[in-house]
Length: 61
Image (tube, rainbow, N blue to C red; front, side):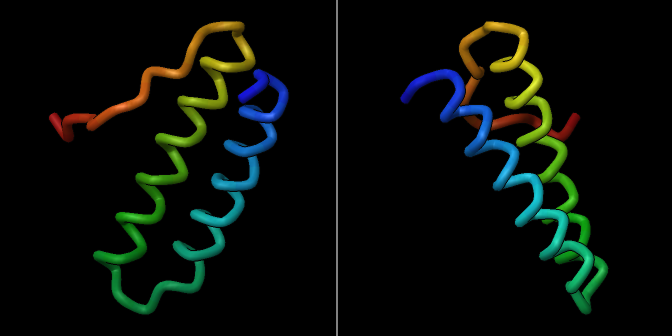
């Protein structure tokens, strides 16, 4: 996938995750979607910086 397409993809995913967080009834679900949006924002920053996004499982430590 081209870098520009990656950036667009991550921007869409951020918007979607934030919308799900905003619409979540349960606080636990809200937290999960907020964390997902934050992770997509990290990936977007990496792509915009010209790096390859570091995909994989991210620890919660």
